[in-house]
Length: 272
Image (tube, rainbow, N blue to C red; front, top):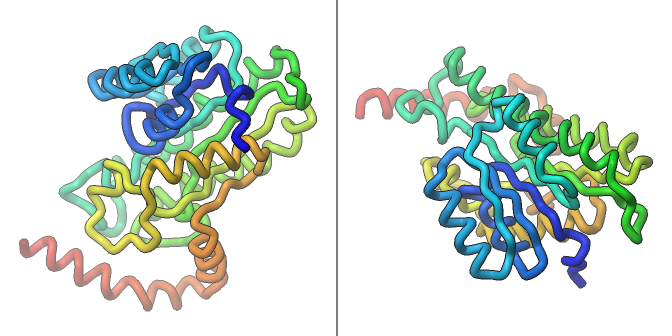
């Protein structure tokens, strides 16, 4: 049974679309206060209006998660926080469309992905930890919960999206490794290792996405996993297991399997 009453004050980054939007809508209810952040003000207001119609109290903030000072000021200003979701992120499909799958990745793309997916998460999670340290424990001896969106991509090496894989691996390792020490303080961290979710980000991908899941279903699984205090929330399980197995194979063997196809795709795109 869902314990919604535990999540009364919620902060979400990347709330204007994708997983962040889906989780905001899933949790929107009377007596729930949502702090929603994102870069697209119009889209953010649309999400806020829908959450308000479901009975939630909503405050929005238009900002970039890469701005450390602005993020800290925002997180510190909201007061009590029961749950924080670091959902903002970018992939190859949301950066340089004209150079998709070029090898190697451009320096600009590498820095953009790393800054958003790693610094953006840290700019959300670190101040949230400090806020929660000052909070009283609830009936379950918990001060607060924090989750960050990692990915099945963080569990494999792939020339398709090296920076994305590396950034998501960093997020997963940070959340999982930090969780043990913070749990003793009553702060529970969760790494969301998910597969392909139907969002505007994945809509731009032009390859087959096995196990593609609706954002609504993903939101439910994320909230359930967080409330169960799971250090890693993984779905679909079969994809995570497959990724683990593939990652054990020799790197050069994997490259021989997928690089020829990738090079053909690049040549085809260059001619089109």
